Length: 468
Image 1 (cartoon, rainbow, N blue to C red):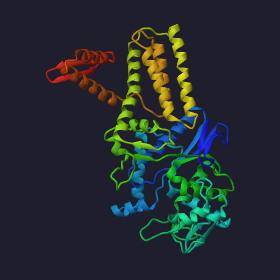
Image 2: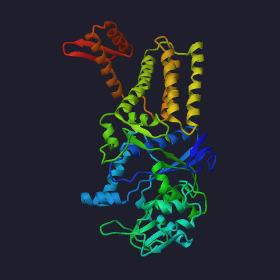
Image 3: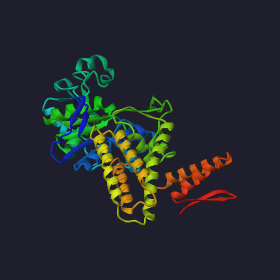
Image 4: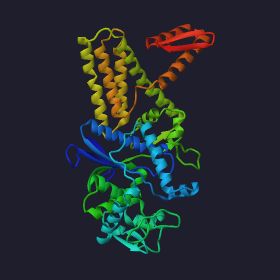
């Protein structure tokens, strides 16, 4: 299995630190509102990575945090006149609902930043003792230049950062030893939540949170650290500096980052009016359509979101759902139990699609090509089954389609809402064909629905339908 490592900028053979086990940390959301579809992409992508690793037999310890203390959370709390804890608790629960709707499995552990403050204080103490951090009037900074490998993940050098990145130099410039030093602990402001520390009553900087939570729940060295590409710098770069300076070991062996998601070819932003939460999308599409859409592109490729592309994803997913529904229908009707010799040969042919699926996933988790392999299997299934097919062959095909879809977390059975909408569309097409006096097409649509167990009845009130 090969994975693209941001650290080396190339694909590398995946070899875990401990045989059979994978320690994986994924940066979670800051919980001050409903998650948007940009948040959803890494959740879906790295959940799929985890699922595939587990399919391959690895025991995956998967940790993904919630940042529940942050300027945005505090601002939202002040706006509503409630506590920051009330805001974060509310949106953690809402986030979990959205994750469940997107079929994202719960992490092995979802640590909360506010419950890990003691560990962060301890880590900052260690950094001060080792000379990597210093206190100025209650604010603790990390000495960036003391960490010789700073910039190795983002492939930036300190000279360029010094001259070109003003945003890193605006905070507390007069107090810092160096403009590029970043905050590990900051004193509280009026009305903000705070915790006691040796330096001041305050709260941790954003970067130290993940370093401490990763160390506590996964250990000083981990296999995979993942997140959106917007986190490469400065967040993940700073995590490396803190963790390796403190622990004296390589922090993460493989760094995986998903690319940005754009809306109608533009960067998503509230001011541009092209900002969508997962809840917004659910008003028009089932959550499984959004997951399917996300996985139809390679995770390192920029992904463009639009209604046309979502409609296309819905139609594509429906092909799999319909094939599954048809197999179930034929299974219930099948008289022959055991596979024929010909069916056994045909079933053996399907191992080729499983092989294509696995080869795609083992090439840096190429879900787009993995889905293409499922479509090839569906096409093969549609071509080789009929009313005289044995129950054993039908069930084997069904199990194979369900198994591969499940590895990607794509739900293709158990819900009829999508099928119902498809049936209504076919009935509408039949009505239009009749209006156009294309009775052959109208009969073809009716017969096709009947084969799938859908009975149409023409009444004065219009066409009514029911399942056989």
